[in-house]
Figure 1 (cartoon, rainbow, N blue to C red):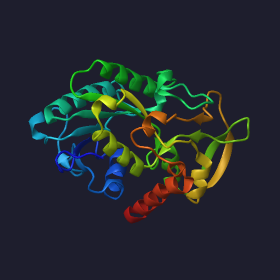
Figure 2: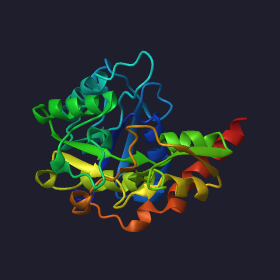
Figure 3: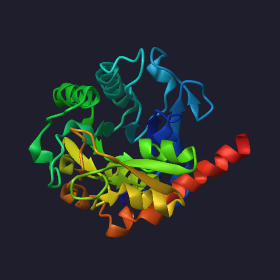
Amino acid sequence: MSQDGGRTPEILLLGASGKVGTLLRDSWAEAVGEAARLVPVARDGRAGLRWAPGDPLDRLPRVDAVAALWGVTPGPGRDLADNTRLALLAQEIGAATGARVVLHASSGAVYRPGPDPLREEDGPDPVSAYGAAKAEMEAALAGARGPRAVCLRIGNVAGADSLFAAMVQGGTVTLDRFTDGQGPRRSYLDPADLARILAALATADTQSLPPVLNTAAPVATPMADIARAAGRAVAWREAPEGAAACVALDTERLSRHCPLDHAAASPARLARHAHALDSATEQTS
């Protein structure tokens, strides 16, 4: 990982107080160490620098890269089109802070799930409103001004997806069972591996970076295996029509910049974030 004249590269983190941003901050020191420094930014200031959209850009420091992990997820009263607006603002922030690259949080939801690993070349074909919003964000960034824009099509982040939300409740986790007798498999990403990926991309030759990049462990992980590794019982229900048995991201492109081995998809490794959530729940109860 290159450094400029021995100076530690700095990465401005937008969305530092969100679920993924919090997990990333908690994992950064152990995963990256002194190879790159994270500069968190949050609206309330509790997770780092206090800054919110609408504030002057000159309040932000000079950095080498911007990691735009902010965004809007589905929910009542939420406008998914804000994903595009925030992405274009992140490009402005990148230009104002002197960043060489802006790493945008897109999603594997831009793809139509299928039996084979999904490649960047397959292009967007979303089946959900959220996936469509992220695909629109990517299209807007293709012609955006500012630093190099890279859209990270991120898989399920351990500790932040619906499976882990269900496991916080403790007890039994209910999963879909498909006609082959198996449960859902998904491409997961440990927050520590996300930290390593961001650090590697932030210091890479920008001309070597593609506009879109699948971001996940190299193989998909059965969700039931993660639940069991976290000490949860699994109950089954018949998968409804349209449910996806497998969402696996091909990570050959990613491996050129930050190769991950199959241990990155280990259920035990991913499940440790459920244990961390349990501990946090106990401390606040």
